[in-house]
Image (cartoon, rainbow, N blue to C red; front, top):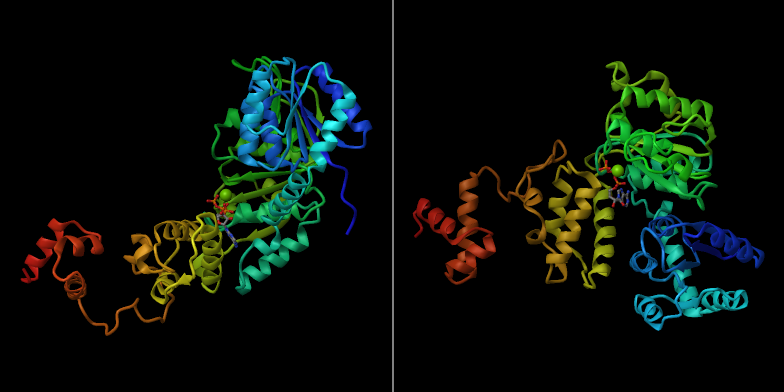
Length: 458
Ligand SMILES: Nc1ncnc2c1ncn2[C@@H]1O[C@H](COP(=O)(O)OP(=O)(O)OP(=O)(O)O)[C@@H](O)[C@H]1O
Ligand SMILES: [Mg+2]
């Protein structure tokens, strides 16, 4: 393995002169340095890049350093944050320390003290190893091993991801909602040479055309009402990294034309600007639509489609790879059991049977949500049908053709018969206690009475 790269430091200061000076001096000490001029930007950067240390001014115009500190800690408590304060007031420093700052320095800064402070923060072994573990975890989160799936379709897909990730190819990822399109996009980024640069997600369906344009390309000051200062777009923010255009099928025709230009010329112009800016990004796109059909229907540009579709990855729906259901269910069970500090052993056979037979309109996300919910509700060792949502236990689901109907032991009985038996069996269990039986059955007492009356079992 190659030696660790130099520690990466983020400097946050809204005074441009101070920011430049700090970056220069820290760099001269052999660190990698990035700088941003406000707290909100700092929070965003920390989400994108696993920094080893944040050096931050507490008093800034937009978001205060303390607020930013809290958010950074909320996101990744292992990153040491060194606070700079112009006020040697104990109060500010104490507040910062309480909010989780690693230490504070007073301004004007003594560079020797700063140097020591940085080294100390770095060498603080607990922090260091914890942070490294966290970085490994962050990276592993999108590693190929974390794309769960042993079905032939998924194995093929994961192979493709491994193959095309290191290339610069534009990739179009298609699949139903919740199938794992974003997971695949992140895996492509993390397994590419751009992994240490930003991965920027833009949801094309979430913004109006005008907003999307300025979001992607940025705007000049005064470009429209409310544009009180120049803003860089997501393409520039993703410099040397990857832009993931989610829901690309929803893009308007004129935005499609502009995007085509970016892909062809590798150049953009800010809204309201004339300056031509070079962009260095890899583009990944996803849609739940059949883009070829959209092209045929005249709703999507054919030339753009071919540009995006250089490599096409199809994520199969969960119902088409039922072999993966037990694996995914176990994967999510382990994750949520750990998160909720519960010792869950697995799924009862009946619960697994229901999972295997369900139609999964919401795909992997639906499965993940169902398992998380079950873990939260669970009191025993095994997830049983009781902890599964009604959508899974009640609906017959899209059982694979040729299979017997779901879990009816002898078949050929009416639903009413089955319901009646269930009610009577539950009443037997609760020794005739109707309130308890109603609760177990998930119905009100009134409903229980009504049903007993219909069955003549009062
Ligand atoms: N093969 C997989 N292995 C592990 N986790 C998965 C897999 N596929 C999806 N997931 C998880 O399922 C959830 C949904 O996946 P993701 O957000 O990538 O889907 P999507 O296709 O982008 O959905 P949407 O179309 O709704 O935006 C995420 O939490 C993701 O981590
Ligand atoms: Mg998505």
